[in-house]
Amino acid sequence: MNSLEDVKNLLEWYIDAGVSETCGDVCFQAFQPQVQVPLRQATTDLSQNKIASTQNARELCAKAESLDELKKLVSGFDGCALRLTAKSTVFGAGNPKASLMIIGEAPGADEDRMGLPFVGRSGRLLEKMLSSIGLKREDVYITNVLPWRPPGNRTPTDAEVAICLPFLKRQIEIIRPKLLLLLGGSAANALLDNSDSISRLRGHFFDYQMSLKSSIPALASFHPAYLLRNSAQKAKAWTDFLRILKKLKEN
Ligand code: URA
Image (cartoon, rainbow, N blue to C red):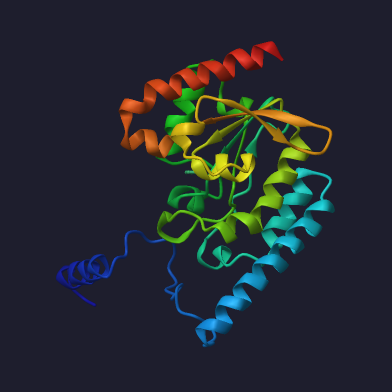
């Protein structure tokens, strides 16, 4: 390739082919099946694989006594195919002694690039919302249901959520926050075991059952990415954050 025109043509070709961003120098076919298997067999294997992976994640998690140990286990876990297409494993970040733990859905492109949760546009809005109730990013602990970015930011599948959920649950057990803020439907549905839409769930406190004996109050609210597209809903999210502040003061 030797002219600017060639570069322009190549980029146009990528755009036409559906490429929306770059994440490294090496080109690979993320969606190419590695092994050809009949569809029926592939489906069975996948569901068995999901059960095995979930079991495996649960057993691994039980061994982790600290966030550092858990982070190492998540980084080495190969039971979720998302890690093949992601650049980084995005573990939780922030204050490990926080009273408030915030849980989103999954890393986006910026988070995947930087290896940290909520560092892109959604993160900047989240920081503004936090500052409206006098909190900084360093005051809270922020994580996601999934530690790996789904390709193209698609919604995680039920299987992906089920496989990764033990890692999130163990993070909650280690941090033992006083309050959970669940941003968006994926986090709310996964942790509250409730399939209602986020519009129905938001603004209400639920009990997240951490164990047989202990539960943590959990408030569901809109995801910042949704608020960036629907700014008319920001007022509702603001009232949710005021509820969070009130609850933190009660505890
Ligand atoms: N959206 C999320 O749910 N999590 C992130 O970390 C970034 C965007």
